[in-house]
Image (cartoon, rainbow, N blue to C red; front, side, top):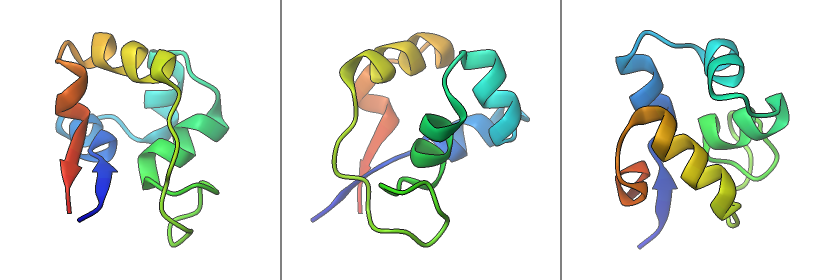
Length: 75
């Protein structure tokens, strides 16, 4: 079983696209692309994301006002 980030769903539920997420969450665009697509290279069909910085997870959880675990799902 694999794990992926739910960032795109959470952002789109708030009416945010990748650019607005990047600006409002104050994260680098390269990071925004990796977490948006849940890929290690930030491309839509890239290899699965394997590592995530805990500071970024904390920042995103605070931005979305949720617990960090809610950013992830098993697939």
